[in-house]
Image (tube, rainbow, N blue to C red; front, side, top):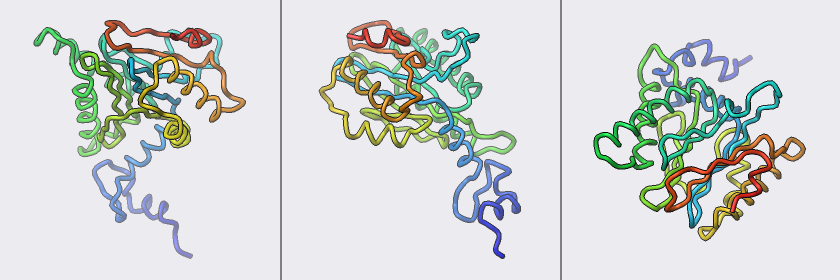
Length: 240
C-alpha cells in the first residue's frame, strides 16, 4: 500500500523547516501557515469613491473580555490602518514595526508615509522568515488600508511576502466565499455608506446564523479627513 503524499513529506522531513522545498516545489511550512491564516477571524476592506474602510469580525464571545482590548484593526498612522488574520501575537510584532517606520518617516520627511511603503516593509519581513533557517514563517496575513494624499488605497500581503493592491479584498476565515461575493457586488462608484452596507450583507450571507453585528468593528478613512473613524457593534449602522 502506497503511503499518502503528506505522510511521505513528514517521513522525509520536508515539513520541518521553512528552507526546504518539497519534491512538488512547495515549502510546506508556508502552506501550513496559510492554513492558520484561514482559521483566523475575517476582515473585508473596500476602496470607495470618498475613502476606504475595513470591517472586521473580532470573534470575541467572552463577556469577561474588554472589547476594546480585542481590536482586530490597528492604527499605523493617522492615514493608515491595518487588519490581520492568523496568529495575533505574530501580527503585533509586525504592527509595531510598521508604527515605528511610520514615525521615523514623519521625523525624517515631515510628512505621512505612503500605505504601499508600509505593506512593502511588512512583506519584506515576512519573506525573510520563509528563507532563513531557525525560525518559522509568520502565521498572519495583513490588509493595509490608507490614504496617499487624498487617494484611498488598499493592499494585502500573504505568508510568502507577496503583496498586491486591491479595489476590495477579504482575509481570514471563509476568505474565498467573501471575495466571490465582493466580485459580484463591488462597484468603483460606491460611497462609504453603501460599501459598509454591502460588506455587512456579505458577512451576513456567509456567516448565516452565526452573524452578530456586535462582534464587528469598522474603521473608516475618508478622503480629506485627517483621523480614522471607529465604529463598533450597532453603531456601524450609523455610518454616513
